[in-house]
Image 1 (tube, rainbow, N blue to C red):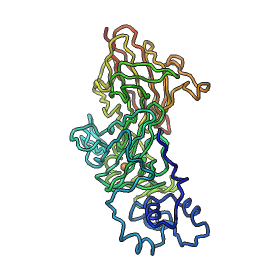
Image 2 (cartoon, rainbow, N blue to C red):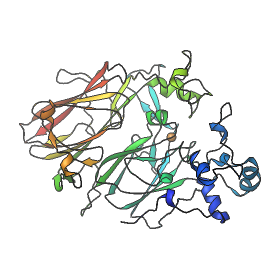
Image 3 (cartoon, protein in one colour):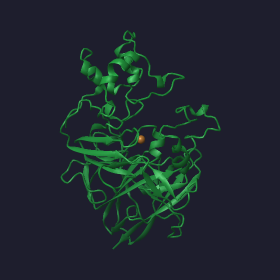
Image 4 (cartoon, rainbow, N blue to C red):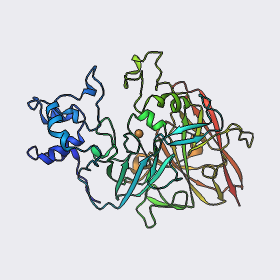
Length: 443
Ligand SMILES: [Cu+2]
């Protein structure tokens, strides 16, 4: 496994003009860098205006505003090209795997089965897309699928505005972590994130710019790390191998349940005010919740979803089966298995509600992993164990960003079994909607 040096330990040669330029192009969050570099402020660093009270936001994303106005305007500005790709620190030129993602922010239109709060029949959605393919899946974004331990490059080339990729659950260097407000946002020039595929399991990636809004708009996708075995990474939805404790198990089908919800107000009124609107009024992007005036028009602390989705498919109350409404029968969500096959479910709660999944008594999957960590796998064998769904009453509850992996043995009578998913409000726990997914077992 190649070693990526930690940025924080990378010695900075202040005598090297090139190195200083590279350092400042990336920048690091105030006040750490200034405190580390120049505790007595002998070089005249100034805090970035967007962090200073009463100042307008920074006009650019490269944190050059941390420098003195003189250095920024007279030394750096003439030699920096805003459209040039940012360099990746400690870049290793020969990764085992590469991904190229561009954005379709502002360009995605999703048909909806009933009118939005604004009375429309479609909803604007943003997303990541592998470049060069019209008609490719872009919401949720292209799945990034890797093999445990390999070095990966994912290139982000935004087409609309600036964004980031945060590979959630992966632990890269700070500069490759894609947390916009801590490091930098990626503009049109693009950036190559470098990271090592983590322990086999289910992860996801998302944009980390004004996260609560960009994530809601659809800027996320699954990230699967497969065991380091021949044939990996495996085909989405097909057969493969997965860890159960320390041993490998094969499965015949893989099912992705990416659970999400939309508040159409966010997709209509809110984004009409720009990509950076947040909690509070426009122009006070990160006003604390306690300071939000009641007549604020943005109010990202108010989330009242009116659409409920699984893997990009919106549940329709008119879709009825088995005495239920909101039944999702799309085969990308509702699996059909031969009796006796083993199914692997990868469940992600990408909604802003608390989600409870109810399995019927006949289906009793085993929970083998949580949040990208295999239960009972070395070196943490003694701390956790796989457990059956029946041992927790057939109900599993996930909060936002949680992932559970389930192995289901379908050695049950052939038939249609309904798995019910309850969405509860993130504050009040009020039940907002119950949707159902048929799991069909044929003999
Ligand atoms: Cu974004």
